[in-house]
Image (cartoon, rainbow, N blue to C red; front, top):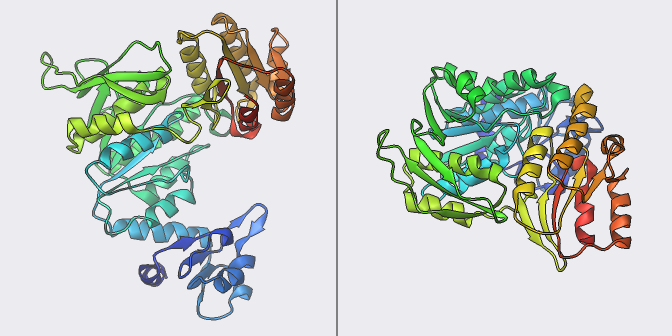
Length: 435
């Protein structure tokens, strides 16, 4: 069945799952969700120009161009894995609680200086996004970077069986999706599934050596290491973090004594926490023999545009946009970095951190305490969880981002640098227009 579907895919190598994004001559996969049944849209997809529609309910089969399977999602996954098996290129799998998308983008920028690279677009990193990424790889591509996200144990292992990565990267293990993973130990087990898969395949890891947890999990698996110590394969150091953008240096360890550092590499990334993401990209590029000058050029040129560590200047203020997502680990790092900036008139706008389960109250209290420790008194806290935590301070609190917007309209902010950080569900992007 998959072989037959694959023969159709070779003739029509574009896959669609949404009738709002139909490409003529493509194959439509009628996926199901909690509130929709893609089978109902199969006929519309065909009318809009699809060559075939893959369905799993016989009543929607109008003719031979409606390809009937037992389960559309499983067929999409099996097709992508079958396609993966035909590819003779290195595939890098990347996951982590924080920084995986930024690291993926940086690695893509570096490797693209020398190779034709296919990397996960945006945040297509789940059980649907990974197959779609794999099916986007063509014979022109020389390597692929596949981002893998998860919010419960077993998910990374499943994605690995689909993508079959040859190389693995875990950026870090932090307090993300605690509710689904069942606590920090659950996060550790879930993320380490990538390492276990790479070990079973006798592949290779790129390991953040300064992270003792990752180094321990990597154990005896073949690895390339990066960090601040001379014993690692790639050694780096960060410049003084007195401005918004981070600068760093890196070097290949020729031996334990002779380390020749690169030039100082200025970047367009905000936050010292991005140092290891940059060093990871340099490490991967160096391993794949991208010239040092091209690595540095790629890291200098990369400019985030995805509301992650993104600097945005308005007519009135300088904003650090970091509201794509948030968890206790990433929010703490963002606040600590922000506090270290040598800038006057600093302000934070923070939104609730979601999916923390029973840890929610404790973790929001900890963030409020951190603000006090760092003497950040000018803070707006948005969301019911922060309202509860904020009662213990003088911080201004709002139930929704709309309420925060109304406050900011009445109380204009100017000549300030403002960190905006929160989970996507809080919709902090609404406050940008009034700043």
